[in-house]
Length: 492
Image (cartoon, rainbow, N blue to C red; front, side, top):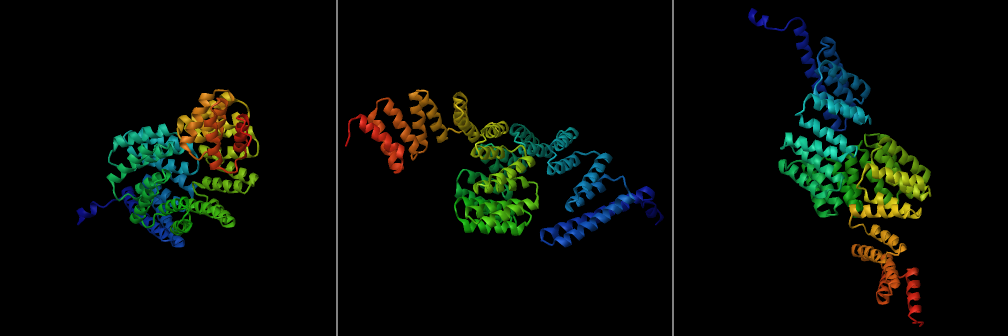
């Protein structure tokens, strides 16, 4: 008996032992809080989290040198959305025992606060502490991808996969990185690999569904979204994405049902409100649309910048340009590394004839994403208006290099070549635009003009006729055809 008593912890060991029991109790309250929150019982969840905080504070008071206690406290404070106090807790944990995982956790906090440089410092520190920590490379890759530093992200995903080639999450992350670069075949291969590794991975089906949707393979996309929802009936983002698919197909009732379901599952999903706002805008239910955009902004989630962006587009469509500009400015303030925000603001500036501001925004979009074909095209249009023809030509050509099926870029480059009396080059570009879009009336009309200048009158006439068939109200084509008839002395 005495021997058993002698094995019991004493002094500081007893405090540490008692503290570890309190840690376990705090974890239990935290888990209960999570269950309550997922069930929508917010008050009950908060009570459990508060109890978890009380208990872990007791543990720290009893034995203040346990880094684990501070990590538990950070987790509870994060659940209570008391982020500054949480930061102090995780700082103390790192001070007591710097570990790679804890740097990653703090990096996640910094990212949520848009403190990206501090987040990157912590990602780097985690890798420095453990160069074989595959998850650290994956998380840093996600950081780089969010900053549109896709090559750096790819390097990190490749390293994570090298270290752990059987973890589907890394393939899924690399697939998303490829998807953002419109490298669809590479993205598809990675999503397929993630599904091969884990056929019950709802996230991978959801990601692949998005890829198929971008490729306009709507049946395949729908199948994947359905599979994701079958695997996880509470997968709010899959409902939202399926709603987006239905919206593209103009199946508005189905889209609305899915957006509503996503919001029922997660009332704090700002993205679902923004997507439903887009649907209401399509249906010209403008008050409902504005209410949803406002709700998305009020939620103030990590991606609130997207809600400002969509509301800015909404105001733009209503020709409320000052309100639109304010929202686009706010979106850029919150996320200054998203090329599309600058591109859309450039369109707004262009519509207001503020061409230098538009030019600056298109250039910034290109700086952030060197494969942004439409930004090159729009900047080329501005250069053409400013009679900077060499710059315009370079931008049209770049847009075509990036997207060889960009009919408008061929058409406008053809205009430049025609004005430079490079008729063969103009003819080639107009023909390419027509190959891509056989209903491109302007391209037929302008090719007809080239043929006319080359005295190929039968070909010119055929093109004018086709332009008129496509657009029976095309005044310029009638004029050109009339001029051709006049020169051929066909006065009747």
